[in-house]
Image (cartoon, rainbow, N blue to C red):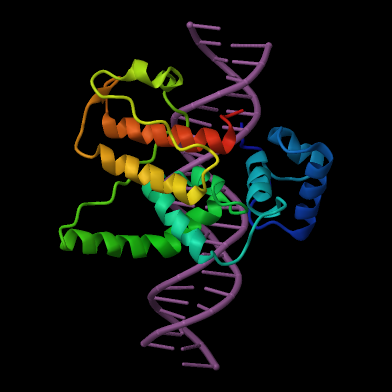
Length: 211
DNA sequence: AAAAAGTGCAACCGCAACCTA
DNA sequence: TTAGGTTGCGGTTGCACTTTT
């Protein structure tokens, strides 16, 4: 499939960048499998897509992360786990790769030492949501009430008009408020349900659903 | 000044989800 | 229903650059 012999790998040259930019300006994004051919590039479609999304796309913000951006990343990571694309969706101009790199090289160490400190002081652990498949179970497309066996439905998510900061605060208090109550929803625990509710909210609001 | 170690970031890889015939 | 093709994601790697010894 992907294994075209002689496909170029490694760092992109300015000439290649130029070809890719011109191709996407002419034909638009999407149809990545056709891009190498249309652009006249000896690259695989994955490489072209990645280069465009992480480097060439207009409005990409480069350079250091501002303090408020770092704060957002930390809080969103608490809510969403390693779902970098969802986190990136809340940080205009930042790419998922950028945020992932930033987390892995800067924040992970800080957070690990912070967590160790918490364990040492026997503080309750932060509510980290495990990474999940990017598409939610079909059961969630049904009204929430139908899925619930023995727990009340969660409150409605915050209205879209509130600020991002308030959105996160809302979800943080939602998670804290549910602590200790472990009912089942379609065989999942409440925390699974919380996780999916968060992902559904952030995922859909960011992308409007996939495709 | 040179070697070693550490760091940051761009790019690659594998896989699951999704689409379509 | 299913199989093949496409897309998008997160994890990982490789390498250039910087800092330390």
